[in-house]
Image (cartoon, rainbow, N blue to C red; front, side, top):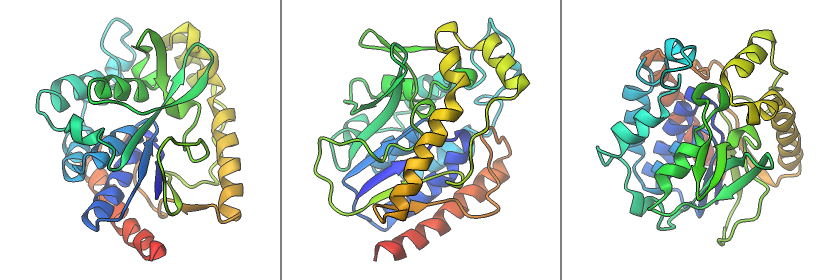
Length: 277
């Protein structure tokens, strides 16, 4: 199975619950692909450490340490999203993620990033030595993180900007079974163009070289979802939309809502397991 994971900020906590249940049920997966915050889920899933990942979503993410509006609008301070803190002060020193196991290929781990030079999505397969830096690039949301991440001399930002669900691109590994796409908001939800305050935030916070990409993200998102809809209608993809009433938004900081979203993900996984037979 090819398992494709959308991001969506804290909405990805719901997907973490779903993946935890799949892992407990030993559902076979040949390749897992994560975009944006879905990259964290993909890495922990590949390492078979979803219990740890769910704890990270439950305990660390819904806090001012990770999501801070004050930092967001303090240009000389740290980014509003504590990506560096999570990777460098929580995951790495605590050895929460087994880098070797995550990249050994069972399942094969892929992350999406957006190449700043040509504004194109890149599908990368990290190694243990560079997994943390590729995760940093995959999580570099233009407004929330407001930095360009360099890996091997090239600049990258969040892969969800250019491709929220990487279900089409060929992979360099053998994949048996279906393509399963896990979204954190319904496929039919169109992404609107940025409103005035969003355009203002981009101009004030986002590096100049990626402002245009940020302001046109809705076109890229809606194009991918249109192609995904066609693939679902043709029976080429199994779609896992989130259930109605999912309480999570991109920047939810309420721990109770995060735990509720994780539990809904577990329930949704049981439906998926039934679909897979």
